[in-house]
Image 1 (cartoon, one colour):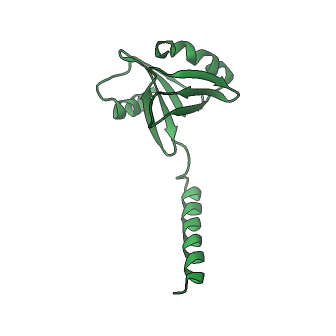
Image 2 (cartoon, helix red, strand yellow; image 1 turned 90 degrees about the horizontal axis):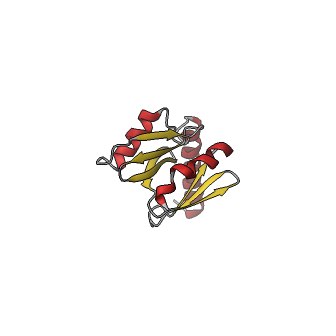
Image 3 (cartoon, helix red, strand yellow; image 1 turned 180 degrees about the horizontal axis):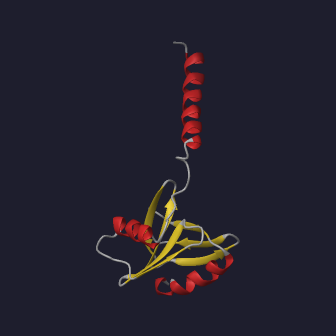
Length: 130
């Protein structure tokens, strides 16, 4: 098959798959339905550190986790969730929420979309991380 036919065919196939996934709702960001879901997401990453407190964001795409080992955060990363401790983090407010800079090359920056009241309150719960 000539390359002039193969390349458009492959490109259209990839675009078609992306459109189908989007139409089926499989491109939505993960949603933490309640504190139990956020706790389960945390425990998938850190099974030896059960949360003592879970604070969900209003949009249910992030949760602040408090443990005996210190604070952490769970957030939607595409259709799945991930979690990190906040030890050594620098937390800054942004126009849309918070930016958390971690000393972790696997997740160096986290941008959380938070309502203005949450963006003002969450850093006080994260104070142990500085």
